[in-house]
Image (cartoon, rainbow, N blue to C red):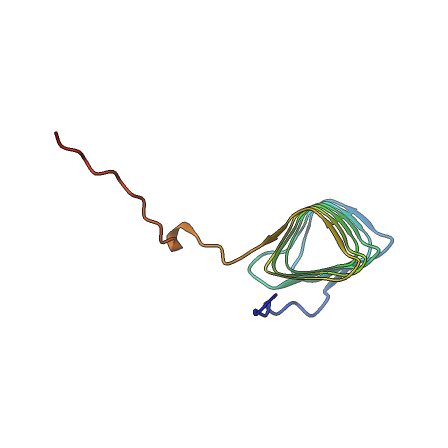
Length: 139
């Protein structure tokens, strides 16, 4: 969050899961999703397009979340993988690890897990490390 602006979030909510709704099973979505109800399962957005997940203070999630942008004000039992940005609002309760590039945590939010900053992770092809081979010894 310091010095870098996160990627542009999806600014439109395409789907809504209402307060009286309980879904059992995984959810795959694109665009924007707002959840006011309960989900028992993973919530995943494809990584090639911006996505936004908004959880109201009534939302209860039991499963992992994988999106580009997450705004959380409800309860999550599972890991959050946000490729860009996570905002934990005052009533957010997270039991699980949080993976993020940029994060905002408001007073009152809690995380029972580890915070993992997704710094520019290098692949093996990008690595500058050279493996040393011992020289042959002659007698």
